[in-house]
Image 1: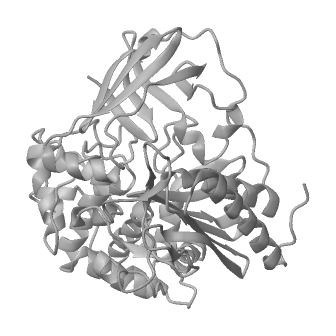
Image 2 (image 1 turned 45 degrees about the vertical axis):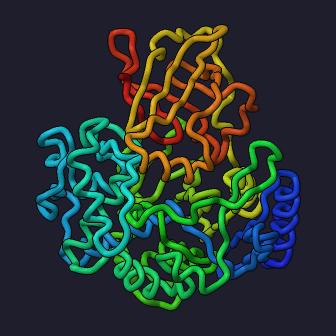
Length: 477
C-alpha cells in the first residue's frame, strides 16, 4: 500500500473519518474524536454523538475526560519543580511529605520522588478510591494510605502501573508550591501550553460541549450513558477529573515534541527535563510491558519509539501519542471502552502508511511444550484477586474485585460499568512466563493491544512471585 501524500492533509482527514465511521457503526461506539499533528499540519475529525441521553453531537471542540493521559501532565508539573529547584528526583518523598506512610512501617521512607512518576514505587493502591472532594482531597488520600495500603514490591525492584504514585506526586506538588493541584495544572500546564478549553471539574465542563462515557447494556448491548461522570477529586493527578479537547491535547503533545516549548513559543519545561521524561527509567524486558520513562510509556514499534499514555474514564477511553523522530502527535477519545481498538488501528496505520515505519511482528509463534505449574496459584493486589489454574491443558484466570468497604464498592462498580468480576479467560503459552489470551490472532498484539498479554516474573522454587497483566502487578498470595 502506498503512503498518502503528507502534503495533502485533507486526504488523511478523509481516511481517518472513513475509519471512524466504519468502526463506530460496527462496534456500537456513539462518538469518537481524533487529531493528528504532523510536520506543521494539523487536523481534527469528530463523528457521532457525545451523549446518547441528550443527543448532543460529538464535535471537533467537544471536551472529554483525559483519564490517565493526565499522568504525563502531573509528571510535567513535577519536572517543572525540579527545574525550579523545589524538588530533587532522587530525594525520599518523606523529605517533603513527612507524614507519608503505608501500612508496612518504614516502607514509604524508601520511596524516592522519581519512583512516583516512573511507576516503580510499589505502592499497592491501584484501586484505592477515598471519596473526598475539594481543596483537601489529595491530603485525605495520602493520609489514608497509612491505614489502608501496603506495598507490592520494594521501590525500584519492579514496574507496576501506579495510580497511587501519581496521586502522591500530586500532593507532593501541593506541599512544595503551596498551591492546589488544580491551580497548578491550570496555571503551569493549561495556560502555559495554550490549552484554552481545558478544565479540572464537572462544574467547568457543564458550561461547554462535553462528552460522557457509555457502557454496553448487558441485555441489549446498546450503549448506555455512565452513571458517574468523574472519579472523586482524590484521583485528580492520576486522571480522575481533568477535561479538555483534542486541540488542547495536540498542543500539549507538540510541547513535548518541541523540547518543552509550546506552540505559541512559551517555554513550559526545560529541554533537559523534557528529554529526561522520554528516557528509559525501567524495563521489564517482556513484550507486554513496554519500557517506562517518566510519565511516558515508551512503546517500541520496530526501531521507532512511540511515547504514549492512554486514559480510561467512566465509559470512555483517550490516548495521546508523540513520535519525536517523525514530528507527529496523535490523540483520540471514544466514548465506550471498546474504542481502544480504534485507537490502536489508527495509530498503527499512521505509523506504517503515513510515516513508513515497518512494524515487525511482536509475537511470531506459540510454544506448546511449556510447564504451566509455576504459574498456578492466587495473586493479589489492592482489592483484586486473580486465581490461576490449569484447565484442559491451558492456564485459566479468574479475576475478582473484593471491595474493602461499601464506598469503595460503589465507586469502583460505577467506574467499571457495574462489573465486579470478569468471565474466566484462558491463555496459550508463547514461551515460559509469557502468555496470550486464547482466540486472538498473533498480529493483534503488534500494537497497543500487546497489553493483553500476561507475563509471570521471579520464578523461585517452582513458583512465580508476580503476575503482570495490563502493566499491573499482582503478587502471589
